[in-house]
Length: 626
Image (cartoon, rainbow, N blue to C red; front, side):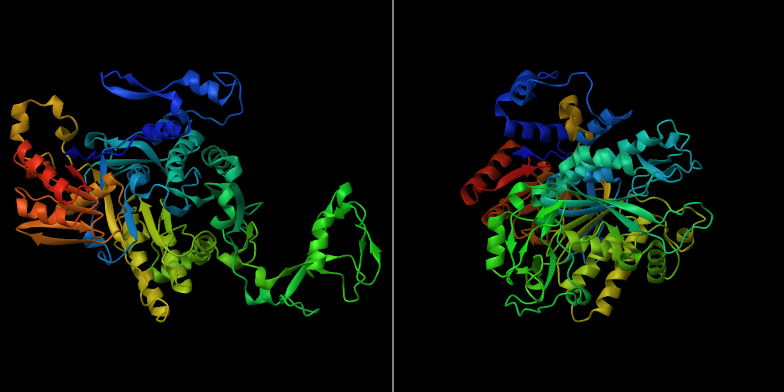
């Protein structure tokens, strides 16, 4: 039986797979430094296939900074981590499809690569803006307890592991002020892109401090052609009189994974009653109410300068400096179908009709006024009211996130926010589901940053930001259900909590060859002593690329506990000395995957017997051990 990897796949391996898929002739096998056979790229062949011209140390258009290579390598580096389920802090564990994950988002994004690769329809993030006063993540963030200065304000103790987790205040005096921020955001966006569906879209909030650098980073990661919009959001309702120019706005960058899918990835906003009031039908057109638009275009194009005869017999030409919008054959089709309007008396320059019946919605502007989507003061007030006291600064308004979610998602899409803060994205997803009957699912990711002792949040009893986010989801969900009893009766307002931790496996699991046989014999199990069946089960789901939101059940079969995920996507049993009758019962259910403890079997003969049972009863099942 094969062993579970229990570590994330290297990003280098994923990139190698992509190259092999496009150019199989450039991938070969070589003997690595450890003497093992591994894959390698024949660079000379790849260069010949791509172009006769390639850059090797010469000048080229590029955006770089000190630490960029390290950021690229960090995104591709594999880790030995896991997500441990926490049912006690969850809500509706058995039925919910939403996730709340506590931990460093870089490592969480790596863990989600297998289970959610290409499955996320929309990502929204509100990362640190690098104002010189906020904290940013340090990717080399684990330090020993001896190095931890409790009063530094830059490190905090992880409640689960006791380790010190590093964040640092990136002041403008730092020689790498912009570089450190660029490295932090680059590696995370590189991983986030792989989670998106082909028609997936990402929205990123930012202000003036790093918007220029963020645009260049996004152009590199997502591709310039996949840029959709730079939305200007009016965040204030009144000017700051202390400034010569009061900053009234922030930006929201919008990128899609593939611009070819933009029509389905970003839907128009629904028409309001006021929008519909602008449509009329003065000529009793059978298609219904319409509005007209200009049938001319700027410039001089000879094949679009033809004469048009109006219904009244007038001959009209385009105005000076303009031409007709379409070629003459297209004009003839529009005229014959009655899609042009020549005025009340049929003697005017033609205008093209747009019918309300053919409009899926209205196209949004890149200028979002606070009267439409809310402002920062509104966000603070709505959160304070919900939580019954001030607990969090700089949240975004629910209306803003509802607009974003409405634009980019529908039905049962997955929404991710890996800088989730107060969890306003989760709030907006639940609110929108209640309004339109959608089944959208959210995944929130947040580092458990400790609330400062003198903060209002700490005084209210919240130890870290994650506690605030989880409580907001609980309260918001119940409030939405109370306010929408007819449409939200079956609304999913729960969430499964997971916490980032070190691997479930002892070091010997990864380097058994370095231990003597006597040492191995002394180790009863290669699984850490504090890990439960649930820890092991979800570790296997991550390793095997199964979604963490799927339903699972546990039952007793012939004296051992058997866990079944999604009616057979995976069946697991981690008990010692599993009887053959239980193995046969599992095999008869013909699961896609089955996993057991390696130590559940006395030796090789017992493992061979298990394999033979599955070959007989369920030959399509993949079997692994941990």
